[in-house]
Structure formats: C-alpha cells, structure tokens
Length: 537
Image (tube, rainbow, N blue to C red; front, side, top):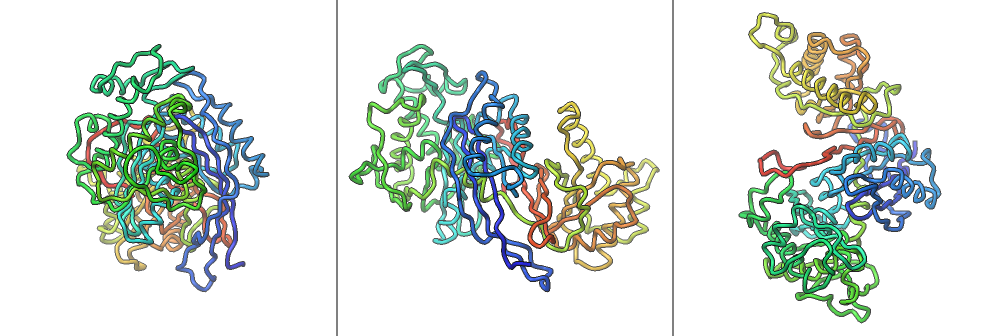
C-alpha cells in the first residue's frame, strides 16, 4: 500500500447569479497498517481546472433550468478530460436564493447522478459561509497568524460570513442581502427582490420596475445594503433592518476582528486594483495578499455591466466596513470570485477511522439523514437495557436509542413521501456522540441498546442502518452487533454529526480500510429565524 495517493474531487456551485465548476486533486495520506488508530488525512490540495463563470440559467424566476445547469457541468468535466468514473469525491452546493427555488433539490440530484456515484449534494447558508472562508484562504490565514478573520462572501441573494480565530471556526452569520436586490435588463430595472422594497423606502431614492438604471437612482440602495452588511459584522445589537434579514442562528456576541476578507462576485470587484496599482474606488487601504496580477476596477460606464448592484455595492462596502472597523485590515486573498466553489471542491471531504465495520454491498450511500442519540453512556447493564427497551407497561420507559430510531424512521418516511418514493434516503442514520469509557462492557452495552431498539420498534428489515460514532470504536461495535441484528448495517467512526446533517459515504479508498465521507446540510428553502441553537461547527 502506497503511503499516499491522489484522488479527484469535483466542486459545483450553483448560485443566485452564477454557476461554477472546479476540479481538484487531493493528496491523501495512508497511515501504516501498524497504526490502526490513525485515519487517512488530506495533506495537499491542487486545483487543476476552473470552468468559465456561467450565468445560472433559469426557466422562470422561480425555477432553475436543470438541463441548462447539467449542461454547464457536463461541458466543464469534458473540458477537464474527466468521465464520471474518474471522480472520487466532491460536492454540489446550491447557494443563496437559488437554494430556495422549487426544483433546487431535483437539480442537485440530477448533477450527482450525472457526475458520478459519489458527488454529494449540499446547500445551506452556514455551510456556504464556511466553504467560502476555507476556499478563499481566510481560515488558513487565521490559523497561520493567530488572527480573528471574517470572510464576507457577498453573492447575488445573500451575504454569508464565517469568522475564524486561530485554527478554529468561531461562528457564521448570514444575511438576506446581495447584489441582485435589483435586477436589470438592457439598462432598465427588470425586477426588485421582495425584501428590497423597505430598503428602497428607507433610502434617499425611488426605484420601480421599468425605471432607467442610473447611479443617482441606485446608489442609495447600494449604500443601505453595504451598511447592513457592515452591521452584520459589527453586531449584535443589530439594526432592525439587519435583524429582519438574518438567516439561521442569530449571533449572541460581538466579535473583535483583526482582518476582513470579502469574496464572491462583489468581493472580486472590490478587491481589484487599477493597472497602475492604485487603490480601488472607495476609501480606505486594502492589503493584497494574493499572487494574482492587479485587475482593473470598473469605471462609471461599467457600473451595470452585470445587470445588478454588484459594482455599486462593492464601491460602498469598503467605506462602510472601514467606518465600523477603523482599525481592522481589509485583505484580498488568492480566491474571491471562486472562493465558494474552491471550498466545495477541496474542503468537503473527510475520512472515517480505519477500524470500521462495512457491508461493502451497501456503498456508496447518499443523503443519509441522522438523528443524534443522547445518553447511551448512561446505561447500566445488558439486562436493564433490554428490559427498558421492551417495556410495555405504559410508563414510557423507552431507551434513548429507541426514541432516536423512531425519529429517524419518521424522517426517512417523510423524505420518501416528499419525493414520491423516487429520491428518498437509502438508509437510516444514528449518531452516537459518546459511549462513555471505551471498555468491552460499554461497547457491549451500546450494542444491546441498539439491538433491543431495532427489535422494539420493528425496524424494516430491508432498510439499512448506518451508525456513526465520534469515538474510535466502530469495528468493535460492529462485531458486537453481529448476530444481534438482522438488518443490514455498517458502523463508521471518528466523525462529528449533528441532527441537521446528512452524509454521503463513498466506497473505500486509502488502502481500502477507510471510507470518504461528506457531511452536509440539505437546507433547501432555508428560512429566516432569530431562534437560538447550537453554534455551527
């Protein structure tokens, strides 16, 4: 077995405004067979192909042109010289307003099938924020310098912020504000996003469909949008207009920032320099930490070349951030326009531990939903567990595993029903966060809980069960379950999964003693909420 190997990864980003594809090679380490505790790790990433940036095709304002996007991906793979058989891993992510389109889920499934057996499907503003921050190099900069770095990814429909401090992700912040608050056609206002109307009303302008696009008319809207993005970085407390547009978890504390990185289409404009190296339009210095040649910042004549507010928003965002963070550096890194797709293609894949329990006939698996099992470590002995699991006295003495398995089956059935039985999940997933001290007794106890619950809830014998543990015990738990359960199952370990996650599991790589895994959040049509929840990983 070679101490390392290269695998091929594909990243596809279908955004509100644009669609992009990258191909990368990931250098994977193979720990020696004598070190069973060591998992394969990705040691290096190399982007080998970047597709042209294509406008996301739509059938109508509410429907993505699935065939059109599939053709973009097909052309990109052909240009890269790849067939589906050449692809080992990767992800498709539908971002911003595109994720809310009614056929977004059908789109990613189509691409996943066309591009190969193990290209994952993923969406969600928080995940998008993290991928952009990793793809841009912001996470790497934070780890290398010890700084607190905010990556601000401004797309067509949303702005997604990931804050990194040292080597860890602190939090994500997401806002329903982007460059396509106003969409133009032929120099005329063609559409105004519903959530932009009060921004326009609160600005020093009036904008209606059919108006001629002028800087005087649209600049005030860009000013307000830039102020809200800066407010997203600075708060809480937030401006009420910011508050009403928050997506997902509302941040609870302010963060002291050393550096801000702006990515996405707006970031690409903001980060450009004129040919003679002059500062881009706007105020405040910008540090260019990339290796790219300076670009040319758009002139007044180019303000509406993208048929949206992008160039105007880029102009206004720099001074808005500087006003709120006068001591914070604004830094341009190597990736801005392609930050998210680079993150999708190079940062989504992880690997299970090496001592796992596999039924290879079940692989690959895609979109397995998970329920987190709490309290497994609280059991006492096998007889007590079995008695509790099989209780019929009406006292509600179900085990934690039984409750989780019932919830998982309901999730499985709901997903099958919503897809008409065509695209339901292939398995039911349970995540065991902790078994307590890893001893023979604790593993046997967990196996007893699982087996008793499978029997008590009459788990369908044809539905595979995927068990994931955080601790390095999958092989031992798999062996303990052997003979106790009759349903097909596999056990993998050394992963962290939350209740909102789904995972894809590929066929074994790295000496065939570990499997590639993509953990993702399928949050199509994600809604705005200010409810608190666990912080993102």
